[in-house]
Length: 599
Image (cartoon, rainbow, N blue to C red; front, side):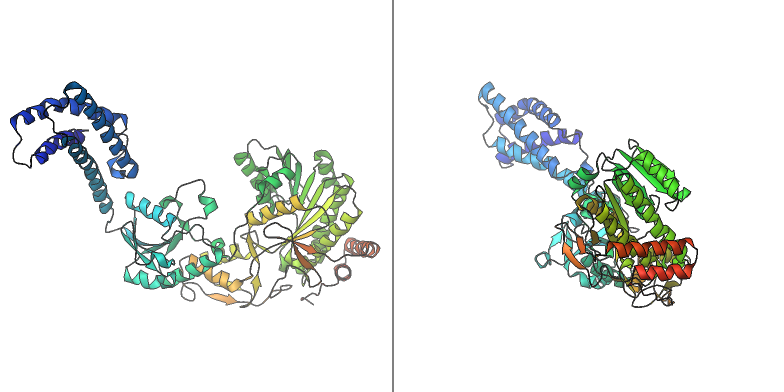
């Protein structure tokens, strides 16, 4: 306010001196300028206050502040001129004084503010700050650079890199825009870069892979902004930066959901999730909580997992009516009591053993949990006239080479045949590959091995797997439930398979370590029951589009009901006899494409 007071006086007097060419103001005009000055000063300050010139900080002066200054000066001059004109026709005030005063005042109010901000921004270039290279000269990159320049940041943007040719050799925020992200390592060396910031929220996963590989060659750390969806509820700033996650470079595009259809299908329903404490089950419960079910029943045999998901739902969804029930799907009586009491309308069956090597020599346990457990839940769904039953299956059920995959394929066949027999219940199967960072998957194993200093163990240099994130898998399960009518096997679009060796390499790089120097990769050979490459559908199964993104319908093979029923009864009897050899033989009879790699 003190500064602006001086500037009003200075601008008013400068206007007179400028009008008379700085050769001296005639006495009568000098007298009038001094006589009118208190009125000019008071009028102008009233408008300064009215337009909020003192609500902001000079440190962050920007275009809105300049607009406020312009409004305050314009309306102040307009008011002052009008009053003086009606008072004495602006006697001894030359008409040119008014525009001159207006221009001088605008400059004297705005330039010091901008200069102050410039000086403060320049002070952020501290010797201990990290020099940052920003990938992406778009809106996100501009906002990130602005945020870094405005505050006392430990990161200082030095230059931008972008693949758009029309931005080549231009500047943004006074910083050069360099061309071609393939030359990142060259720019890092040329500009003495300490850290790389990837600021392209809309980037595709394939492009992210390429840029991450280019960043890795530069041997400096790098961070990224989240995706567009993650940024919808917040501004782009330094606080949004995070380490590049392995999910960022999976080579997959995020799925867009039709939440209206999912909510219409599940909202207000009583929903039971078996295996609700597991990696898929717990995320599924959280997603289901968002669609406002009438009640959510979580059934799991792990006390710790059940406690965790129950605590999480209590914290994040206090209004949700839910119940955590400890039990095993193999225990039919226990399960029957739950289904009869809770009367679910939709069942998501996620309870299963899934670790291939462990189950390979424990055939009876695998059959009991994965097949008999599924049969128990499906039988009760039929008996209680549950509306929809969703089986969560796996790509290992296609041409299975292991016991786990064979039991899951048998469960698929069971649901197909039950759907043909059912009058009220629709049986739907969803099949997908490996879920990133789920319990027992390769990612937590690699993370632990890296933490312990290695080596990172990979079964085979060429082994590949399909991957998707846990939230994406659960969303697509819910989508399949919403669109399925019964008897379908849905396959989720898993993108391109990824080499496990590449996954290991990327996790080592993202940990800031070097392969062969800090961490070694050791190839140990395929384990019992493992394939080199997984498949999502059988050669006799054809894929059809569903009209929904990333969701395909398998034209599943049909089985003669009487033959299938006889084989299933033989398998169940062999399982009850506790003779694993006979059980394995009957499992192969039920799933003829099962060719074990373990014998």
